[in-house]
Image (cartoon, rainbow, N blue to C red; front, side, top):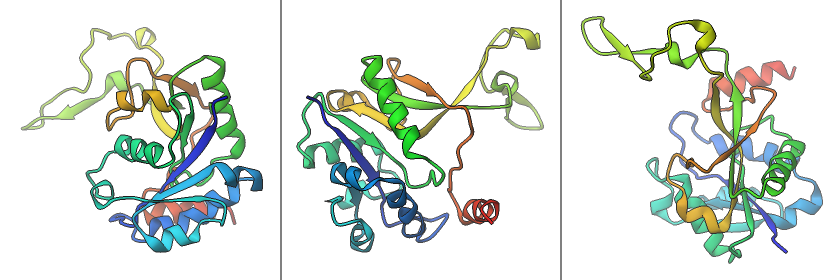
Length: 214
């Protein structure tokens, strides 16, 4: 029977929010029930971050070339699956520490979604307010071009859009070789979220979130 393994990627370097993962990881560990710590792993190049993990969490020491700003999460996931010696049908669930308000129920829901639909790879779909088909990008001399080429002009003709969100990433190990840095393929399924999760990318994001908890 396929097992589910949870992976928390947490490299030491962070330019926008120095020491970010040291601040965020305690919230990740708090989310996991005790029995789930048996099937959880942390991937990091930082010994101090590895030391913060609960005793039952597996430590994966990430090589230097997978701990740079340019390293892709797809390579980090493949490295973790290899170190953990996962079987092809096992499910690797990747959980970025930056999603500080993620719940264990959301994690379960995404894994159930993948299993029920017999999918190989699932990302989350975050609702957005704007219609991206109406957006433009600057060129020069105050001119612009459409971000996405299309023939729509009436608002009612525009399709419903969403933003790809890595709140929870669920992937069968056999499908990991298919992924690129964008973590998306035409076969990817999207789990629809009913909210906009908080993504802590810099210190101001964390401060804003902390204020909402007061």
